[in-house]
Structures are given as structure tokens and as C-alpha cells.
Length: 79
Image: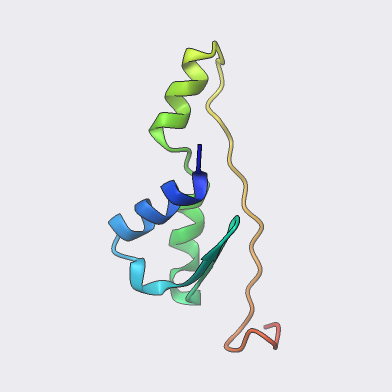
């Protein structure tokens, strides 16, 4: 199951596709103006994952966490 792919689809669906600079492995680099919205999308479990957890007998909703680093206007200068 690919959570990054699900996140990218949800980001595009939210109209934030133009804010994506780079997506690789398990990271997405986005424009700072969209970072809060993208973080909210990435921490919301996709319905398919929730359904799989329920099918497996889990009683809790899956929790997704993100590690966020604001890099400022230039990637080589931390802001």
C-alpha cells in the first residue's frame, strides 16, 4: 500500500498540485504557502487504509505522522 501515492492524489484533488516541487521515496517538497494543507492531507488516513484496519479487527483509526521541516526560500538556507 503506497501512502505517498494516496497523498499525491489527494493533494492534486485539493487543487494543490502546482505547489509540489518534488516527491521521492517518502517525502514531498512543497511550496511553504501550501505546507499546512499538505500536512493535513498527509496525516489523514486514506479510507482504504481505514477499511483495511477494520477488516483486520483493529478498533482504532490508523494514525499517520509527518516530519516537517520548513526550509525557507532557499533549500540550502534553513529558515
